[in-house]
Length: 92
Figure 1 (cartoon, rainbow, N blue to C red):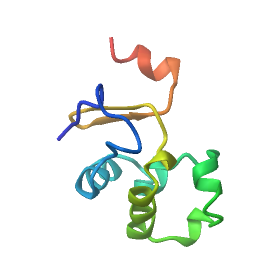
Figure 2: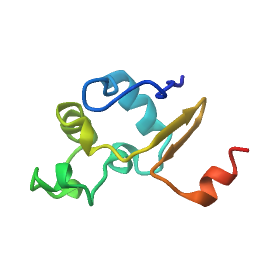
Figure 3: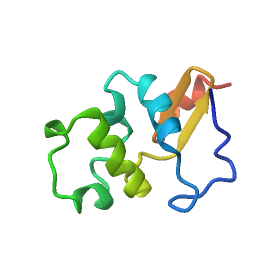
């Protein structure tokens, strides 16, 4: 499963619960790895992510999709979050 995010804009066109679960399965830390912990949207929630269960993290992302790490590049079973020149080099 993959999504072409080229034309999607957050928060209006944020990922669905199913899409978030599929992305979380591709990450070693699950849904917690999807969150931009340094971003103001997550910080405004005032909660320690380590105290939350996977489903609770997903619900918070659904309510505030701007708390997602961006950009999101999802190709098949490969998911890249945030910008990293080194990671992007591997896409060529």
